[in-house]
Length: 302
Image (tube, rainbow, N blue to C red; front, side):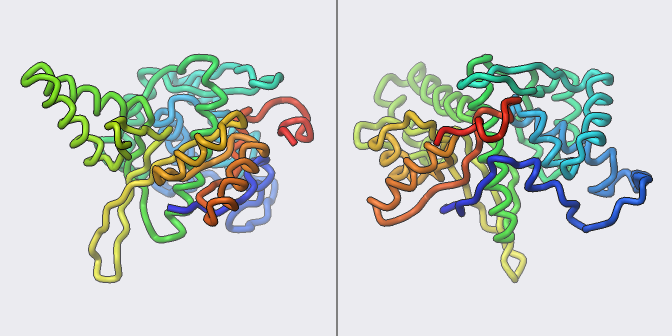
C-alpha cells in the first residue's frame, strides 16, 4: 500500500473545522442519541477504544481525532473518563526537549473498550491494552498512533474498513509462541518451519536467512466490492526516525512496509530514497515528539 504524503505536524489546527460546518450558537448540542457517532457518549467511547488499542497516545491527538479540535469539550470528556477510572494521564518527555501529555487506559478502561470494540468497527478479537509502555518509548508510540490513523483514513477513502490493529510486540509474540511450541514438540527444524508458516500467514516478510521482518504496526482491513463480496488485506506500517540509515529505509521499503516519518527530516530521508528507487512508499510526518509544549516552529528538525 502506498500512502499519500500530507503534513500532519499540526493535527489539531488541521482538524479544527467542524466536518458539517455547523455554526456554533453558544449552546453545545450534545443531546443526541447514545449511538449517534457524534454524540458525547460515542466520542468518549471512541477515544477510550483508540487509547486502549494503541497503549499510549498524545492527549492532543484525541482532541483532534474525536472532538473536532475543541479543547474544552475534549477536556471535559477526558476528565470524565479519568474520574470513572477508565483513563490515566501523565506528562512525557520529548526526545528533543519539552514535554507533552499522554493518555493510557486503566485495566477497567481496557475491559470497557473491549466490550465496545464492535460498535467502533473493530473485530471482536482486537487486543486492548492497559497502562503505559516504557517512558522512553512514549514519543515513538505516539508516532505509531498517528501513522496508523493516517493509514486508516486512506483505507476509508478507498472504501475499506480497518478491522484489527496489531502492534509490533503482539506480532512478535504470535510468531515466537508458535515457533517455540513446534520446537518443544519436534525440534529446531520444526520450529523454523513453523516460524515461516506464521510469518507467511500474517504477511510478514522473511529474508533469505529466514529472519522475519516485523513492522511497528499492522492494520487488517476488509474491502467490499459492488457485489457485496469482502476482500481481506493487511498493511504493514513502519515509523522511521531521523536516524534511520539509507540502507535501513531501503530494506523496510523492499519489505513492502508503508513508511511514515517521525519528523520532517525523517520524511525527507524517505523521499530521498523514493527518488533514488523511482517510487514512493511514504506517509506523513507523524511528529513523534507527540505534541510538545514548545512553540510550533521549534517542533521539527529542519
